[in-house]
Image (cartoon, rainbow, N blue to C red; front, side, top):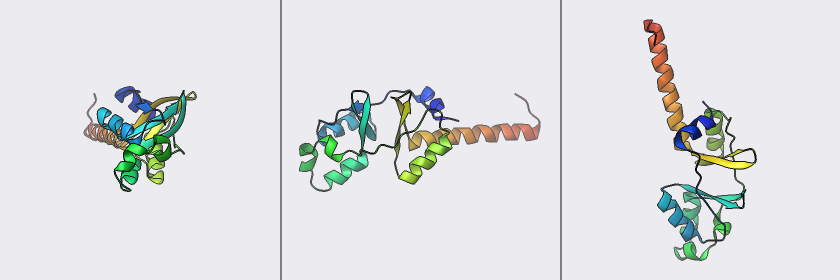
Length: 144
């Protein structure tokens, strides 16, 4: 299974925002959309990503920092991205190695989606369940 299969199922909408707002503004976006990370863009270019972890790190220094710090100051700038044709197991390895939970997906020079580690685990689980069912059917001589 590949990333584009997940995007075909869950959708390709990506919540984005500008780097000019405050981290508190970004927190409100995260809560409003029930997401764990927001991609920071300027025009069609990814500038960074702001995750729940980034917000927590900043907030640990004092809650007043959330309303006085610009997103550009708190976001992760070196964004690791995936491709639509990446195998889900490859993407899981990239995310595990880099200790990230959200992977923006780039295709033809544009942001075409985002997947979370939960999306990948769920897809992998479904793939394993289907494969297990087919193997059991094969062993029992069943055809579908």
